[in-house]
Image 1 (cartoon, rainbow over the protein chains, first blue to last red):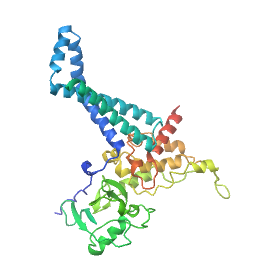
Image 2: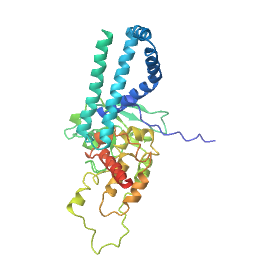
Image 3: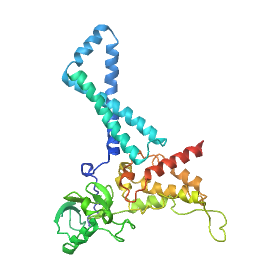
Image 4: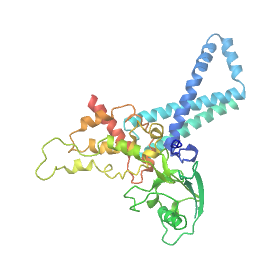
Length: 128
Length: 231
């Protein structure tokens, strides 16, 4: 019996593709969205705990006062900022604002840098 | 010049592999295609498509150092060594740098890439004003090399459903043509969550178009036309 025909291979190794800045902003948008989705129940829980009483609020502050948990918060600040900025960029481009290549490159850079800067500020505040 | 080239022969290779080449360039080897032809002087098993060798036919599209482009208009002096050549991403590989473009052309055919006009033809020709003709600039120049569609993440993940940037650019070329009378049908066909709206405005297509066209702008214009149509 003849062997079944082999499926043709495809080259699609993302690590070997040189992505333009717009693609990096876009994948950041997705990653930050997933992070926000996963963290949302925990953030809502933390909010609910913090609103119970002054003591619970203080307890939450103490609990967060560890470098690893603070680092997690910094990542969440990056995710929220990047997702918000990339989302606004996306909506503006949908209505034709900043959708030319040069402008799109500039707004992609701005989104990435602004989100990292704000995350850095949060890190300086919480990790120092 | 040092190159690393994706090799795959379905008759002898179980899986694709990379092969290194060290090539002494001649004085006239100015473009990447010249280097590929030089390699073929010593290794005629290396397979790739090429025809016009001046960026008109779109045959020699490939992934060059991680970006899609045409070998014939890529200057050797602009390339970082080792030059890594792979087939167009996401397309089934037939052999070495030759990919199967059946799906790509199926999408192209689906948008009816020809003028549709149900009116009685005039005696000589269908005239356009300079402004109407101007609207076709930046659209008709597409050479269907597939650099754009093969660099589009939305097309990689939905190759059978998303028309892709090349097909959509061609679609808009006829949607905006003042002589075409099938605008409504064309828009109705594209008004689909996958065919058109799978585009996420990443703009990889515009980044790599070797003709400097902007499929993302054409897609934006189709969306605007659909919005106007529905209001």
